[in-house]
Length: 185
Ligand SMILES: N[C@@H](CCC(=O)N[C@@H](CS)C(=O)NCC(=O)O)C(=O)O
Image 1 (cartoon, helix red, strand yellow):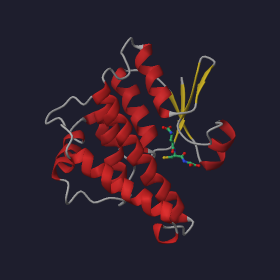
Image 2 (cartoon, helix red, strand yellow):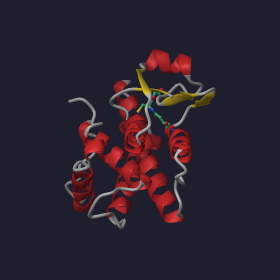
Image 3 (cartoon, protein in one colour):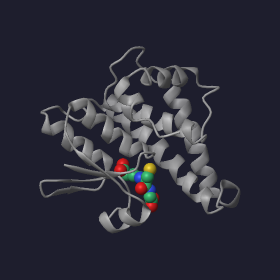
């Protein structure tokens, strides 16, 4: 199994956490912008090659690795909602992050202002979610942890007004598999 990705991507991190946690051996191929454009139709990381199967999204990769161990991907609508809302917030935060590198910010666009509001609204809703107070984290909770830890690492969000999310991300970092996959400082 070959996982193509970067050490900073939160999507790649979620896949690495799952693979380590499940004890699945894999080759990690450090993949930059140029290589992801050549290697995946989505032109993004992660992507995965496994015995002729080619997957171009972290969610299909996660489903594949959990199913390979006979474990369901996500079982309830509540967990799917947490996964999806975390994912929406992550996609949106990353979209603004990349656009800012090109000097395109919410001041220039009503839609990007909506994107910024979407992040705030998602964090406010996630703050009110019933989050765990102890390990282990399930797949949806791990998604949220990958998002929050990346967004804090990149200084894209503040959790000063979200104490539950702050406690949650601290809890996630007590999980050695999660902490060991942190973006390099
Ligand atoms: N839906 C994708 C999103 C992956 C994604 O956005 N990856 C970023 C890195 S964190 C990327 O490769 N971006 C490059 C680009 O947008 O061209 C997934 O879940 O795998």
